Amino acid sequence: MIEEIKAQLRSHRELMETMERELAPGIATFAGMLAKALGDGKKLLVMGNGGSAADAQHFAAEIVGRFKMERRGLPAVALTTDTSILTAIGNDYGFDAIFRRQVEALADEGDVVVGLSTSGSSKNVHEALALANDRGCLTVGLLGRDGGTIKDLVDLDLTVPSSDTPRIQEGHITIIHIVCDLVEKGLFS
Ligand SMILES: O=C(CO)[C@@H](O)[C@H](O)[C@H](O)[C@H](O)COP(=O)(O)O
Ligand SMILES: [Zn+2]
Image (cartoon, rainbow, N blue to C red; front, side, top):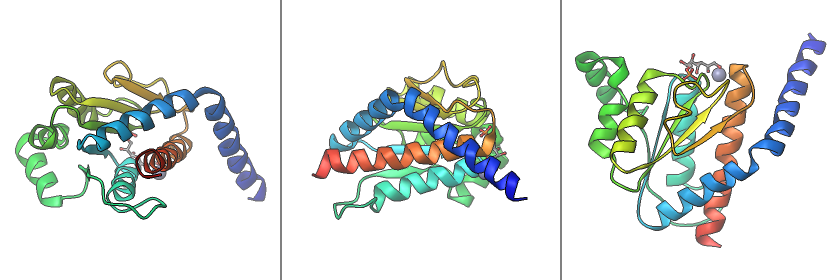
């Protein structure tokens, strides 16, 4: 068991090293884009399924609440949280529409719309990002594997170089924390 634990910790560390080599410029672009949008009074919308739904909520909480600094709240909404909205849309229009319909209702031009998908191909995330593009939003995919169908759809993709879902999710939350740090420092220090 100890060997298995060490192997998993090693694969996490190796992924972080690969991300350090490959993703730093993309993470900087994401942070700059989000800081500019929030500074201009735009908002963040963020979504994902399963563990990525939790990551979406985590991201919105850092932006609305705080990451590390005492500062005013900034506008961010996780599209994963309202069970009445999710069940109404899912029941009436289908699961693939649960995020798209919320983008239709909430997204304005210039907002940043982020989709998390370890496969890069979850249909409900794909459809929401496609509509966000049509709305003139800035779209970002936090993805994994080969980036799936979402990679070519978004303005910016950050595809974590792994095919292991939990490792990809660990990559995503690391990116989210770095971006929150840079956004706070960019806007408030
Ligand atoms: O957290 C995990 C696995 O670590 C799961 O809940 C996982 O998020 C779910 O299977 C999702 O439905 C996967 O969707 P996606 O990342 O491919 O878009
Ligand atoms: Zn998970």
